[in-house]
Image (cartoon, rainbow, N blue to C red):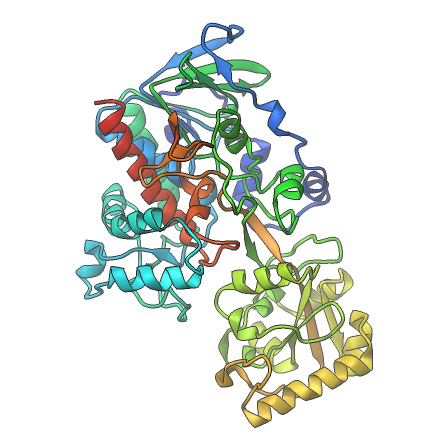
Amino acid sequence: MNLSRRNFFKGAVLGTAGMGVASAALMAGCAPQSKAEADLAETGTGATESDYPIQVLGSMEEAAESFEGDVVVLGCGPGGIACATRLAEQGARVLIVEKTDVIGGTGLVASGNCYISLNSQFQLDQGHEADIAAFYKEWLEAVHYHCDHEVLSTYLRNCGQVVDWMLGQGFGYRLKETPPTNGLSGFAYRISQPAKGDGNREETYGNMVDKVIAAGGAFYPNCTGTELIVDEEGTVVGLRADRAGEAVDFMGKAVVIASGGYGANREMIEKYSVNPLLGRDPVLNNGEGAQMAWAAGAQKPWNLGILCVDTLYPVDADHVSYPGGVQALGNVMGDAGKARMHVNQLGRRFHSEDAFCWVPTYGGTNGAAYNEPWLFAIADQAAIDALQTEDESVNDAYLESMIGLGVLFKGDTPAELAEAAGWDPEVFAAEFDNYNTLCTNGEDPVLFKSAEYLVAYGDGPYYAVRLAPTPFGTCGDLCVTPKMEVRGTEPGSTVKGLYAVGTETVGTMHNGYYWALGQTVGWAHTSGYLAAEEIAASVLA
């Protein structure tokens, strides 16, 4: 399939061919961060809330162009596409407005191996039946009951049918064997997205946008939302966007925010996040959706600034990240990996590594909570040998290059490793010996690491991989009702005509941190579908 022609521009009024800067960054996914990209991350966008005032019909300056449909959807990621497609199936003319020229957003790069689904026919046909009530209670315990219980219940009761609906669109779910994760264990509760790189995500999302266009809608790339348009009663009836410096209006009976948070906006991260960590937001989400909604009267959630924090990628002292090779040493996987302990910037062990084993968000969140700029995974030569067996690119030259970049450190003894990493050799050597003693005894009486992961280190040389709490973006900037209506600042109120789906709203089901790796895509599909159902029933009927 030729995405650049068939899916990007079929029936679209705006846009030009070619990949822009933002889309190139998206397609690069986990590519090494260049100096230019690092500089961009350092400066941020500079956009603030005052840059997104609302526009009132009758008092607006005339736009260069104006387009009219039934519903306007801001963002062409998984949530926006699901919402637009479901609306199109019910006869609505949907205008999809997207800042890049890419269809799929973070859905193209997200892991999605913890895609939550309960009792889809896809699972039931394979003998995997879920206990929804039990899972609901387990989730509440995991977030200490501090979330929107109604929204969570709505999600869990509807996610299975949305999986079957997405299968009907061509989305190739699979049952991937992955290790157990607290709250997400078993195929009755967790499935996987199509594998990255096999083309299914791109093809399916492209076909879904084609369906929107065939129903009389359109896809408008390279248009960045700037203001919501409201009528005299304050109901949201449109969106103003910037297209190459020109104002373009998109009018409808409702607007859906599906713009993915503000993970690439340094000013907003520093203002709202408890831990101001600028991360690897792959599509440069700059927060315009949330800021426009706030200007129109949307409520800011209590946990505004919640981050999806990972620690999978090795980094240098400037937090520039590198893929491949030593990346695998960040995860505690396989027999050789069971020996790995984590230490902080002083060479001291500071958390139970098995909380990090299969869900890196746990380790990242813990590191961020303790204000650790980075942490280190310690490996012996056996772990390196196992990694080289799995990945032939991890040769001696590659490892030496990582050492030269300050990402990997090496020493023949624990004391020499400490000297290379800049720690006190006596402190780290004692920590290392103590850890091996715990492994020999098969018990960790202080941090309670599971005995199965307490495997003593073998012979040197020894290695330390520098990792960092690295957020992939913000996870909840808007509060919604179970119908995906955006909540207003007054108790019980909503912003009329405004809905929100996907990453912008997933924080409603979490507390102060994001606990489920890959779960957001399932929420995006489900929330998009539910928003479409509500709009069709109450706005377009």
